[in-house]
Image 1: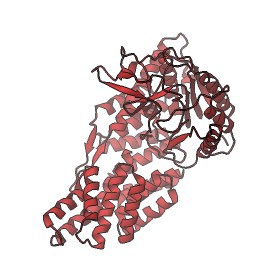
Image 2 (image 1 turned 30 degrees about the vertical axis):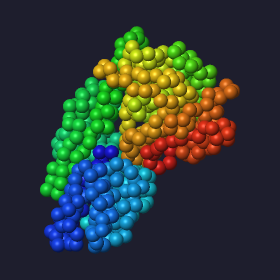
Image 3 (image 1 turned 120 degrees about the horizontal axis):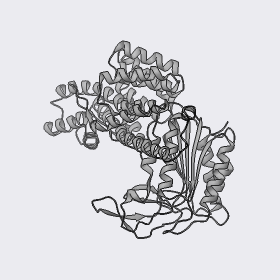
Image 4 (image 1 turned 180 degrees about the vertical axis):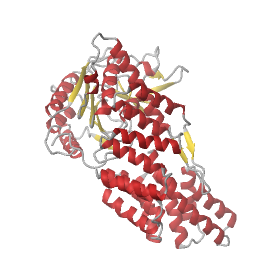
Length: 529
């Protein structure tokens, strides 16, 4: 997400340059001048996206007559603000209107290109960024964005050429260095990837994403001390960075990068404990062994304080077998308590930086607490004696640990089979704050970044958010039965596969259960060809 914010930060400068001139020229426009000037300033210059949206909306819906160019401008700013909230449909609608009213706004073309890249519409994104470049050929960030789009289309050589063009225009373009590092890492040119990160850090050493990228690069080389150092440094950086410039001071929120750094450090700590507790030390060759497709498969059914489930162990074994049949290395766990789940998860996440595809399948109880999703180990009690972190596995932690722009991640949850702790209130932390347990899982909004064709995150639920899935009357759940039937189909794209699974589950349950998914995948992803 940080890379996209850097892009729109630079494009917004153009909106502001044009808008400042318009404010001076338009001081005598109809309507209350002071009110309009204040709303216009907020619409154009505020770093608070909600305030920006409200101000732009007031201007667009007000009774004062606006020129076509003012309407174009305010739609453009509101579209930018919606893009920051990842409300891409509204952002695109505003940007489309803005460019219809005034087709000479290179910033609007650039912002729309970034959104189209993020939703996988690469050809349209290229058309927009080319229009942006035609209007402003010496604007370096536009070349960097063109490189990002080509990288998303797996044209690494073309992407590198665009980044080089950006750096010839502006040798300090941070986005070009970040893009080059990612392209080199995807292509296996790790020394060059690290060199680009170092150049970017020399430009601005406050950017947490750079240190997270350095840590992931170190992990892929099995250089754990350097990875730890990079992640630890990321956690010392500000939670938000203000990039001050004369056209405004956009704020870069580093929250997600800090979550990734914290998760990776926890994974490395857990993996180190697992190694130190066994007499069989991994060899150097084994440590460097890479795997193309990696899976973690867990089936929990023998719950001690919640209602037991008959099918999850069978479901996990069924799915693990199917995955191994199509070339996955599958780490499998059955009826795991929290300590065992943590160890299995750490082993999986520690190996994930070397994989091209990482897949998690969990069958068992899942629940939402305070709007966050959790996977339930078999020994969970939620009796108020222990805080939440000591009882459950936080799904946000799993997703943060997987968040890597160079890998495809698929998380499949055949969970929330009923409400395992009905009408419970649980302690969230040491402060004693407690919240209510709710049935089903909540929608998951943070799915991480994506950088190349086939990367990003896909999160698949056995049923819709807040709804309860069925355990099934046979040996397997309806969802796992359908998933096993289609997951190993050669040449079937993963989202098409889930569509088939959804149709089959709806038919098998008489419409009582409707599987649901959320995706930030770019391009088509195939689990097997």
